Image 1 (cartoon, one colour):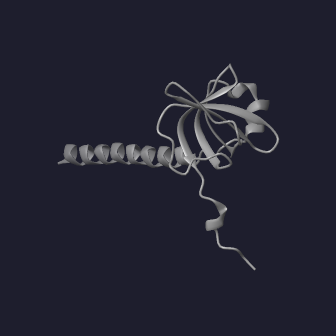
Image 2 (image 1 turned 90 degrees about the horizontal axis):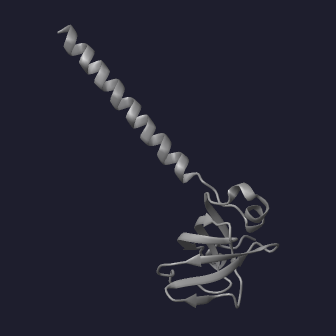
Length: 128
């Protein structure tokens, strides 16, 4: 009977540790915030690392080349070029606010893996 109690305690401990790790990794991964274009351009240590950048699509910057899309975004101070392969969100347009997840390369191009378009502010209720 003593062996059975030890086995149950040991198994419970292992399950608790694994469950705790799963919860911790889920919450810390979702808490990742986005950098501005200016922050990415200033910090050379961010080159080659997975990042999230937000900004407004620069009007007149959207181009296609074979199966890739190229466009620029700005935070109002700096501009960065993004390249994206995939299906563009239906609400994507020049002037839209976007969030891009990807890697900033040595060539100063942000290679996008996931592209999200923010909801327009007209959907936010106005306060008096």
